[in-house]
Image 1 (spheres, protein in one colour):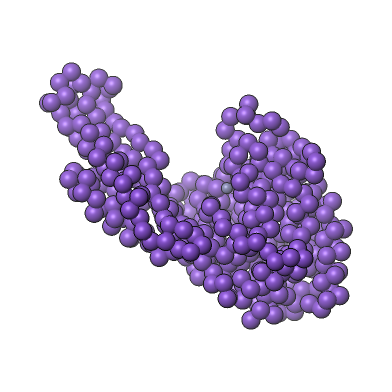
Image 2 (cartoon, rainbow, N blue to C red; image 1 turned 120 degrees about the horizontal axis):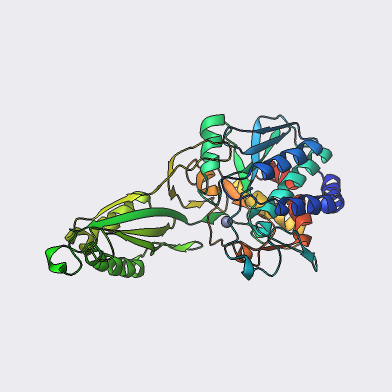
Length: 403
Ligand SMILES: [Zn+2]
């Protein structure tokens, strides 16, 4: 893209900002918890059509895919359209679905994660259509579903079932306009101990499954402190017990089963298999008849499609000297007029599938700060939409140049 076209992108991003804000505000007023994103998806599809996308369709899972261009080199911009719930509404200072704007900040559920980024990719790609796409390039803009419930599942579906496999992906995560090129992964594990039920008045006649579990819980707490593998940017893995339940004939009976749930964050170099082997190696686990497995996800999407997967989300990293990362850093420097910040994300994103499972060079860049995500202060500074739109419009040409 010549310097004149770059100036044109910035001008059009400024011009498009009010429309992008209106679109985002409407999107925030449409509740879209995982599995119930239909209305939000229809809203996104209508906006893509209004903006003149070359093709807009909703796939079998319910993801909205909009295409611009028809070249052989495919780049995708992705954001998930679903949000987490609102938990206790009395803790919110504003209506989480009211779309209220104060002091240039839009408040509401999903404003940061990832409806802000979604609005910016939808409008950023439209700017690219106006100024002219590099001729070899196709851009797919994806508004994906079930991202909160089962991160990356939408991209497993897109790549496996539709055959769309971009050569580079940008995730519009709330990076506060920083460039992200790696995130830790996660494995969700369930571990069960067994006992023998008996009357609660005669505990010695049974075997208490909770007592069998107790040393395992302590062992896991100690295991967390022993995890050594570290990555210079992503840090160490972690393990935590995040849930516990038991089964007994009544609260006056000795439990015959106890189950805990584990959130094992994995850093680069740690795998599902290694995480399970560590658990198996714990003396407390070996001492009893414990059974563990990785959880599965199979809840249906809003289209009614169940696409079962293991809740194992790999860590990912795109090399700093790769064309995708160099292009992202150069594009961000161009639109921000300064050296961009490298964003060290604490969360997961659909990149766990695109980069972690399929090895597609992936970067994260988007408006809003992840500290507000999932919180009762969910918000986005609207001033960040304009540079974000310009970023997406410029990224493909910087990417081609970076090779
Ligand atoms: Zn989230």
